[in-house]
Length: 217
Image (cartoon, rainbow, N blue to C red; front, side):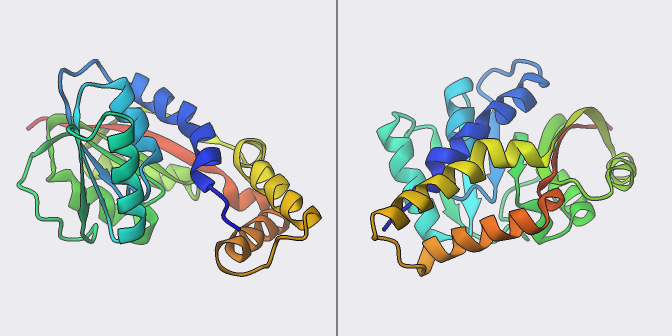
């Protein structure tokens, strides 16, 4: 039994679009998607811009899926994937117009990500971060101290994650139960655990988008 998470993760690309709309129109922007996974937000960025996108992740299976989807969508010539760590990425300073990160900065820490990724962005360029909500006032302070201007931010509450993602996964799991085809192992088990965690602590699913501009020298 295989459940395609991306089918439901795509419901959340409306917030990717909202974040992108906070940026000015850029001609052929060079975009780095850090922790791109199977590329749901990146594919939306490719659709909405005429830019070149590099997606980096440490998950080879997800990257292969992403690359195949990019080719199928006709973006193969504009999307490149790299199997690397998000720490110490081998890009020259000021290589990108936009750095994009949805759900990945938590792996190295919000403040550390702001500082380390800043060198990758051109002066006056942009960083978009989707992260767990946490202490939003502290994060705003870290943004200022790291040398960014906060262009916009908006919050996704726990209901968004249920209505647009987890509820669909839950229904699909239920359908497989009814068919007698579901064995709780592998990805099905992981999804089940995530849904259980959501019900126990739904507030932990609140998240926030930050749209930042790197201050010019």
